[in-house]
Length: 182
Image (tube, rainbow, N blue to C red):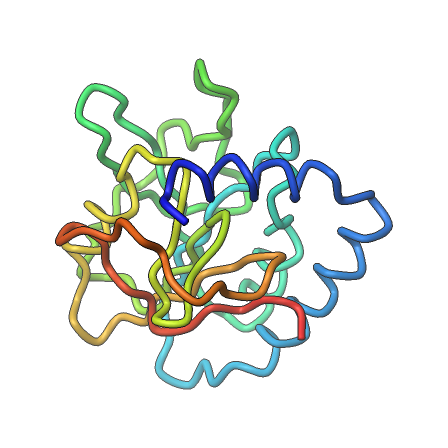
């Protein structure tokens, strides 16, 4: 299937999940994350979940990584050029909703991409080669291009990978790992 079809299909599949199903799927995903080797990780980039889209709740992950003495980094969207800026998320960082309903930091310390060690990426679906389908604006593909070569990219998803995304292009960046319920 092509990205547009996959986007529509997996938005619907995710929307059809019940709250109880989501809680069970998330617990499975969290357990896999808790088993990751964090020995070389200092800065963890997480997306702030959008409950209206039934995204994986990253709040427990923020708490987990803070308890492991890792610094949390979150993004702010620039909708003029579909890029992301990154900021430390401290316990006292103020968050506000942007015009699209995405929580973003206000007056936080800017972080360059080369400081990021571990990056968690939202997605709708991925394929066996770890390419992902997101919401279609290319924010994360642009972002990941600027990260260090040794930074680890991990996609989080409720659904197992499909065999292939038919219309991958040269701008698509494969992930190092995709975590989904097993």
